[in-house]
Image (cartoon, rainbow, N blue to C red; front, side):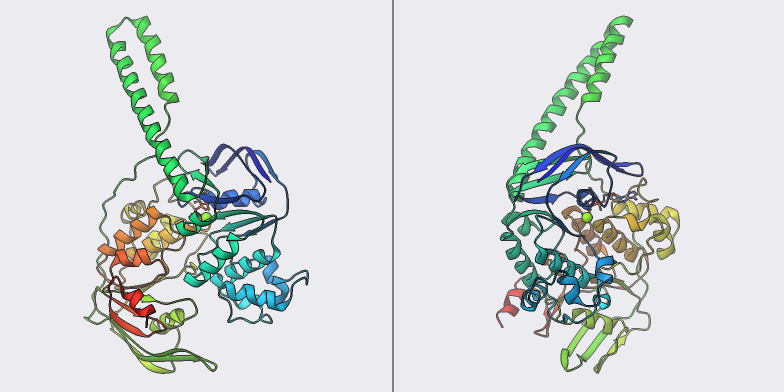
Length: 486
Ligand SMILES: Nc1ncnc2c1ncn2[C@@H]1O[C@H](COP(=O)(O)OP(=O)(O)OP(=O)(O)O)[C@@H](O)[C@H]1O
Ligand SMILES: [Mg+2]
């Protein structure tokens, strides 16, 4: 059981939660939702005592297991010599149970004898998920557990969670996940610092929320009319009466509920990408094996100037290997990569390895784009970072905010090819649509890897390379289906 009473919490000057109360019954399946930066991850940290609130009473009864949004450094994981030791600290499980779990989270490639230290950030996050699921705590707190999984892995995790016998609190931007097995929604309202409770799954909550908002808008406009009437009459009466009326007006104004701010469209012009020839990048007959495992076999790809190409395929199929070869970080066993001499590649990966977490947003934008403050500020604003936010240190940004920033940084520099590895992970619907629009307007070439089919379909790449089928062709809506039928 969880009970939260009168919780208030702020980060420096920003109030994240303002006198929030709610409770969660045993065995409830709760979806915790809200826009990027609203405070969802912060709430999980408060529940497992990793953050201390400014005020309020938090009661959590039962054992708690938590998997954060991204695992970079986990002291428990780092203290284990093998993956077996990490997954099975009490020696209560058989190896076959461990195997089942790690293959569920798409880590079948790793051995239980391996050291966790060598894993990538995405792999560490999935390993932490496997450990939490194995330990079956009374209260399982999951922060976007499907982020690093492809379609199959997602399905597996969803199936597992559907049968979870105890309390589950799940943060996700994945609507499918939030509609299947959830019976309560907590919505973090970033504008008011409140948490709203809804019965039912995501779709049901959304309907209730829309009704609530429409009602609120109606109330506000009635009140506003009332206020203007009073203000008009105040002009026509004597001094004493006027003072009384004005007092009433200001009392009414204070009580007027805040409506959510509409997002303004901000105009800004991106720097044009640097010059490049007609065929900036070409890869011919690329093959690569790790030991006796052949990952890539005779892959061909070409990208024309200004063209958008999608790279599609499940986890572990060699997409990252292929990208590393394209970038010249890894050499292929056969084949070659031909780059235009003016090619400048910008690269986005979900692990944010190029960000210096101690710098502020503004500093980073100016330095990495080589631009003045006057150029950096409107670009940051277009990516939903207002003036009040640009002085914040990058390390403290939420997952979605980091992604949004990384993409803003790429667009500020004069790259003529962007390679984007899963740019929609972490993003809420609003941020996704901003990134989509910006990429559509981008004049350089784009190579994009994504499991978010809607995003790819909207982006309308001109061609797609599908792995492992090794099928490179003109993009069309039904391409994915056709390939899966081969
Ligand atoms: N030390 C800090 N100083 C100022 N602001 C901070 C600090 N730490 C976090 N924040 C801000 O608090 C807000 C809430 O962060 P949180 O990580 O809880 O968001 P979230 O709802 O999980 O978002 P996402 O969906 O992107 O993961 C964010 O806007 C973040 O930038
Ligand atoms: Mg978060």
